[in-house]
Image 1 (cartoon, one colour):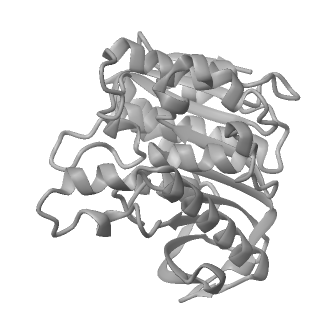
Image 2: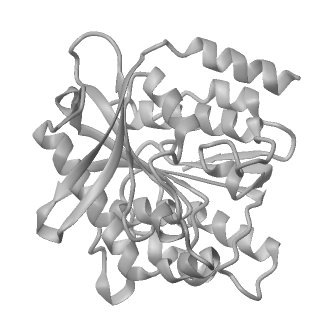
Length: 314
């Protein structure tokens, strides 16, 4: 009951700034690619707003991250959901073996395509593209961040400066000033690889996982090994400038879907606790790191934490 009341108080405390929601496409002629997007505009005035791009998980769409994005828009952010052709819902819809189709789409080529999508949408913010009734000129490209779930977490870590061995940081984009990785994973699902991959990232990162955050891609590994590998992403990050700008979240009882920013699996009871904690933490994180002090105000987040949850700063 306490958590539910606090979650309601959190939502009530955020100004009602959400305005137009527009669906459209960002063209990428250089890659012969059309990128579906959904834009959520902040309301009121003409002041430029900080921007958050959201990258969905494997097999997702512009619906990904809706619960979090609605809160970010209410808090004054311009939010753009980015849909990635080749690893989106079109990969499995109508297929006789959807799981096999998704498994095939989870590869390095698609990851680089996803990173390219994020960069092209960042270009659209810089150029002030019009998407229906939504004018991206309202967004401030100097205050731009990104968030992603699962394969989307891989995507945003890539643009944050993840190292890919001999390929280096080829996907990095310095226009992104902070990223939130929801259900991240080190290369080959192995905690031993985390430091080499993420130790060189120089922007603030929020990394969130939970005690039930499993994956079908880590064959032969136990749940405890998988969750430890996910937690190692935050542990591998270097200290931030303030020592507080990066956030590690562990939500007890949260499974992979609960960390998606959409509440949970379709047809399942939503994990409102996980959504409330993620909403509070990510909002504070982006407020602090996209033009703020680099020291997030986590008062509301800490009040929402349940026994077994953990919050760490770096």
